[in-house]
Amino acid sequence: MRSPLEALYAERRALLGCFVILCGATLIAAALMHLAEGATQPEKFGTIPDAMWWAIVTLGTVGYGDAVPVTALGRLLAGLTIFVGLLMVALPVGIVATAFANEVHRRDFIVTWGLVARIPLFSELSAAQIADVMKILRSQKVDKGATITRRGEPAHSMYLIVDGEVEIRLHHKHVHLVAGDFFGEVAALRQSRRSATAIALQTTRLLALDASDLHSLMDREPQLAKRIWEAARAKLGRELETAGGDLVPAELSAVEGRRN
Image (cartoon, rainbow, N blue to C red; front, side):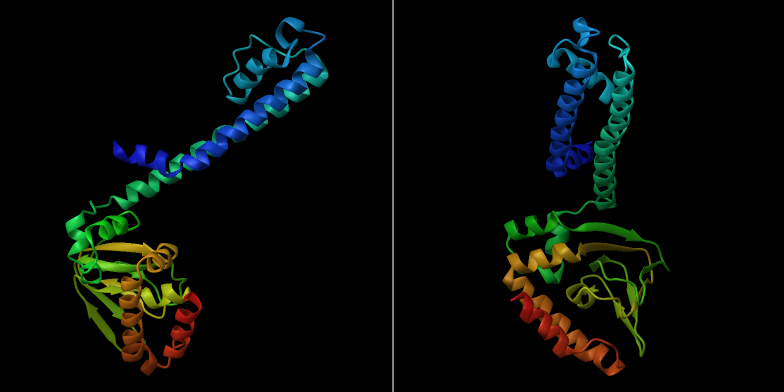
């Protein structure tokens, strides 16, 4: 029950924008219909406030039929208003539906304070910092044998393993990761393509951190940013440089320099 409320709160600015657009469309439609039908039907369209009732009903696609244009120009305006009304209904519905789907996806399993705190990457953060991190983590559960990331695809997230096992298949070797490990941070930092394929060796619970959220988090938490950069450079030098891939420590350092 909290998910729809949180979805509405998360998209409050977009929904407010839709409401402002709806108010503007109502005023414009009412003013035009007043000009077109005011002389013919003064009791229904004699003033703009009177015509606003018709505009609200039409834009809302309710169409009570108590106020109907009779002139050719009025009917043309009514047709255009109906079309705009369909768009106005679809816009907030799409925003809320997308936000709700994202919220449900985040709750594949409950992300708790204790769960985040026991991940080594976040172990040195304060309670307030961990609470802040919890808001941007997206939970994900994958079945045994499922592909989490594929080599060559764009990197949109880094992943932290809550429980389970993941195998990272590089060009030259396979790396076995367990609970507490994380992967995908190098490509996410560089905003490049994946250099390895990640496969779940058993049913695995992950916490995904989107690349944009990762960069924002590192800007807010220098201590955490330092640990991520160190881990990325160590992993790069240990696993990727020897593979002759397209990732080199100097390039990663250049990315860090630009961010600083």
